[in-house]
Length: 204
Length: 204
DNA sequence: CTGCCCATGTAAATCGTTACATGATTAC
DNA sequence: GTAATCATGTAACGATTTACATGGGCAG
Image (cartoon, rainbow over all chains, first blue to last red; front, side):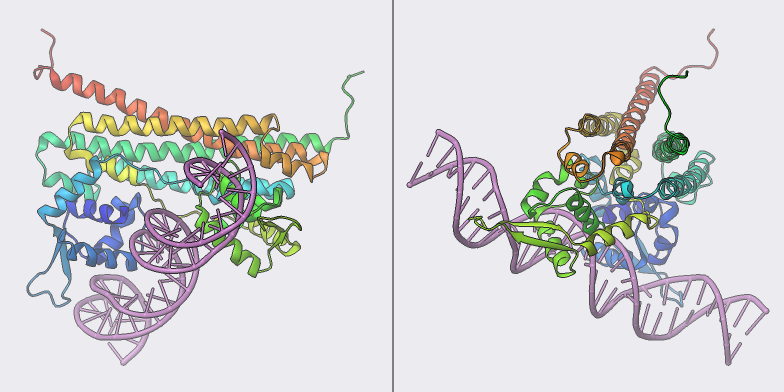
């Protein structure tokens, strides 16, 4: 059900077309909830049928783009949802399964797995950092829209929460990098010791 | 597709019935890939049709339980999969969406959200630690099965990788706890300063 | 007038959850 | 005998991915 609310959240910052949402989702609410165009259009349809959003075609728009915005019911629905305790999904982590069952593979294959992992999270870190910085200096598009419709007294809180979220994700990415690099160092040590002929315990 | 491989991985440690898998999944391969009984039975059926596992009813078993084990094709399929680079799924994190759009809620509601988050991950940490310790002393059931069918020379590697995985998850859980506690402390400070009458900058 | 981006969808298939259905065995 | 647990599934629904389909506007 979360896509529903990710979209409501997006639209609570600024009205947008389905295309806008699909295009910007990965830099805004959707950076925490990935979704594809096809799914977004479907969800918009169902949100409109539920009366939570309304789509209007600006007169004179030749492309007949439908610009969606929240209805009061939609605002209430979003607010009700965010205040409900989160229910955490079960673990689903293919990377860990691969790692565990790589125990029949040679060390270089395992090292590669961990290097890929670190590389992936270095890229993730960079994109979270961009969002974090763009939030700090208020150049972030969605954020700017949100601030513009809220009293100045609330701005600090809005920025604080958004940065709390992005900061947490930066810390997560950094942890994955550190974990993988630690693991690689330990594997280097293991491999080095395996390459030596078996040693006696005494140094005599 | 990963459930398929989580099950293949499970069965690569020990033969089991669908019921066994469903019961023990959360302490074994399934601790990294949550799944329900109904889905497991379905996947077993499809794995058997694909010739990757085989189910046998032990003669004399009144319950006619089907004990599944990997075929050589299944072993090859698993090995091929784990060595392929992982493709990381898009972000899907309802907690972060809630946090961001809690900016219209009072601080106590936000603090509660973060306390719940910390509590959730304290529980997760504890279960990962149990697995990690049970791996270290070889009392972990699935691990014991796996070790018993592999040469002693490989045991250290098998334990190392499993502990690498559980250790990583412990670190993740700890990070979430730290992040939430940091955030709560910052909110405490904000609230304390908000409760004071607006202060002038000079201390005169 | 051609290729690219804007813009909106539908269809089919797969993956995952929730609810339902059934029967055997074991402990009390 | 009856309740709990063992054991195996099916059905319906919802969420997600992949592929397909269509047409307008704009720059060269």
